[in-house]
Length: 238
Image: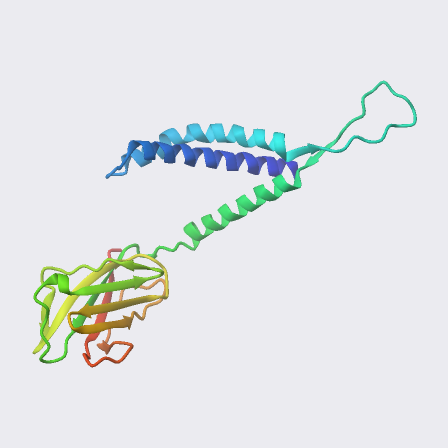
């Protein structure tokens, strides 16, 4: 058990030193557009911090992870030899190390095995809104507010140059966004001048595949006099 705790302490120290030195170099170097500084800091400079952290982890284990037992009571016979004081593991130190390993192990499992990112990488969600007959589109792009909810945040929606469209005699709006997270909570909302915000849930699995085409047209989840309809399509680069 001592060997395992010592190994884990050294490993945690190496990880902490590696990542801390790499993060410090990136912070001091400033913004990096192509990622070269971050890669160099992690693979070229980070190992130096890893070695220092490894030594620090071993020292911490020897210094705080092992404690001496209380001195035994004096023996009845006199002896010139000093009493032997055995060492044992420090339970608070062992609990701290095991807790840190458990947290890092869970994080690694979640990131690399149960990754929150979609299996297909960034996927393009194209949404189209169809206005009722006789309803006109706003003149300015700034008057169109579209929010794509994904997990606990919002994805940025993009209006292309041809965002003003039509379906027969009905006006339409075209927009798209990039999805990347595994989640069952996705929704899109549309706000136009003089029209209450309308919201539609996006019926996709948490880790969806590209859809063969557009979904059927549907009205907002909460009935509105505007009767604006929405449908969507999901595509992937790979």
